[in-house]
Length: 238
Length: 275
Image 1 (cartoon, each protein chain N blue to C red):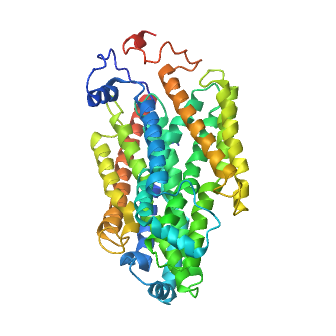
Image 2 (cartoon, rainbow over the protein chains, first blue to last red):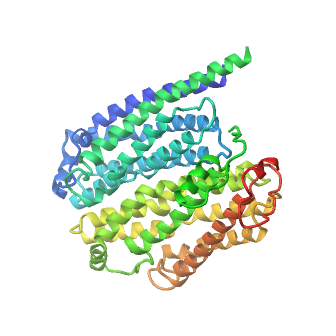
């Protein structure tokens, strides 16, 4: 068992976690047709009280609670690849580690608000509305760690000046692009409808597609980097 | 982390700022540290602007406001809160590279790596209760001005208590830095900075009564819990930014004591290679 074998096992947890995330996403009735922030308190309360919705809300959010941190091994693998880059300090790998703790914690907080709203759907509709707002605003607007993660990774790749850099420059360009399209979601508080609202084109569809695409693309290039590293290690030992 | 050998670099260009930045990006071996330092400087200035001028949540309002007064408070700064905390959400992650840079100062010391790692984890955690929760609570409060006043009052308390009342992370974080500075034999920071960390840690002790009092010097807007703390925090931040800049200028990427600074200007590129 080589070190890289363990890394490959961690990497292969990624498609599994991705599939679980996708299933939970489809299961939560508030995501498939994203809930509108323009809904009244009574409508939001009715959404949680609906006997069709309630179990799906609870089960999907319980699954997210289990697997929200499921991407941390992937970020740890990225940290290891950054350590192989031609840098003078470990600052970039430290910074990605700091982001790895922040992003999932924010998702977990949103998850707790959703689960709390669903725990007593008979609550005063105003209270259910507030927990629902807290969940959606936390989930949508808190893009800071995701943006930082992409920007730091891009900087690390640009400054990886060696003959065979760990990641190719397009991976850095891609990360910067992802960081840019995440920005509008921070403004969800400003609109109850339209592209910026939390169910809107920019804040919901573009943002979440970008996150999904980032996971897929980074999973693939990470797999390539680890495989290459593994081949190098084998060539060195034989 | 393998060291890149760049060979002799050309002279720093005079003239436009952009050309200087390009030069540093290409040839400056300390660019990672400078990226961290500039992020710290820009972030703290922006932080002041966002919290004091745009969102106007600092200096903090009174904890003793009644529910209708709180509704009015949210109403008065509706767009400030929404735009201000949107920007906070976008740049909030910059704390990752800032804390990584500060953790690196401990890594450069002659102390165990446990200090750098502890500091990094503690401060990575701190961003959430210490800043981002306030942004979420203020955004939720501002986005529906017609919300039930009792719930607005809860959001207001949640915002300010999480912001002012998140103490332990800064308390333990400062103490970790203090012990590292005092134990260090690489002269990364002067010993007195270790004791300044103790001052910062003590401000987190005296803020605890803000969880209990709604009026007076110990309340979250009070003379001790806020004004004294802010004075210490601003001094502390200014001092460590200055010391960090000196440290970067002195950095030789070795493992022994940092060389003393000859002048306040970075050594000429090229001459450093021979050292």
